[in-house]
Length: 162
View 1 (spheres, one colour):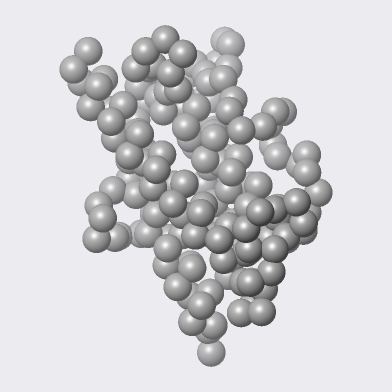
View 2 (spheres, rainbow, N blue to C red):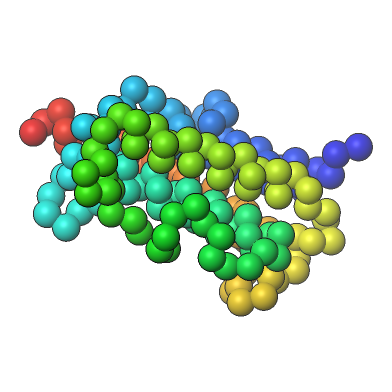
């Protein structure tokens, strides 16, 4: 029988990323139909674009998964951490955009697998070098998706007005 605590956490993660929810658009939905050109558009100097938000979300999904599984740092697919300049110089094409979108989806799948493997006893534990417990990490990564979903929705509206 599935653990009800873990089932609830998975519902949060799923609704924030790709499942239907009462709150409206989720992260995957906010990216539907976005082209590389749109993803690279900046709302202002020094502001992040949609593409950077996508890779940032992938990085933090990786980070939470790594903490849940006790994995070592430094295994993210891209060099760097947190914010990645996108598009990379000379790579503002659909192929590069699709590659970074695939990174987000793959990282989400691996995060979801890590959450699905949790036990009730794990939820109150605090992973090393982490300020919150496992439950807080999982709730936080769902909130992180929704936070950046809102930013993406705003950027899309600003694009139309410019």
